[in-house]
Image (cartoon, rainbow, N blue to C red; front, top):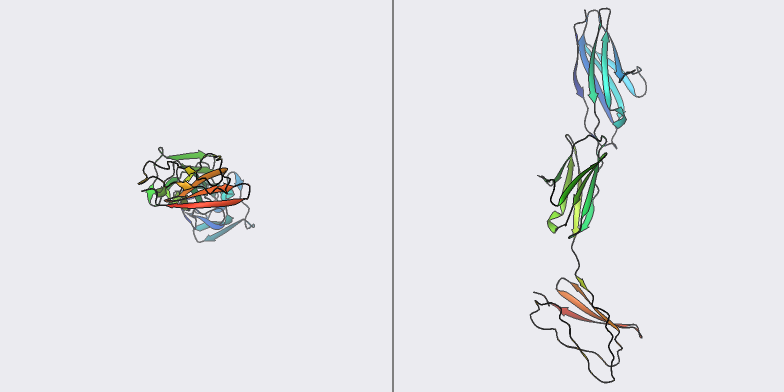
Length: 262
């Protein structure tokens, strides 16, 4: 009678991204007296022999099913059926094609939040998020969300230390993206100020910029020919510029204030 049929291994089956179409070989090893006839099925549907997508082949007691250009649609249950006059034996194999899309490089600004999305081919696929080689915890500043086939990592209250490589890892593959953190530019804008300028008189404009100033800011002498209607302060790190706008003549005057913060 039929002695045995056994699915031994699967070769060239790797977790790949959907962009890479690969060849998959499934094979079973069997013996039978008399020699059994081998057929292959996907689900309940018999796979036709020698068509463009699937190809049967045999080498002694090993029987192969080759799937050309395998992709996510080829996931499913494959059955090798061996039958002779004595009876039949079945062996099934579940082929699960798990694929991930590459993470995009993203940018964020300090104190803001950023979102990274990893998309897998199967909604039930499990992923683990890493920064470098450190697994990211759930909770705190990290929100990990499952939305169908999307795996979303949200990082709240960004810090400069958050910059670097992030990995979305599946059981046999991973995809990587980089996070760049942009620093906040400090910008202070004064309220619009209207000054009446009397001819040949000096006007003193004083503002308290920061309580940590070493010395008070020097008084600013406003030229009498200027009709000041607006001023504002723009700061970057320890360098500040005070801008005067003469709206009537479209002049812009600036004064550089260096190292006013320590």
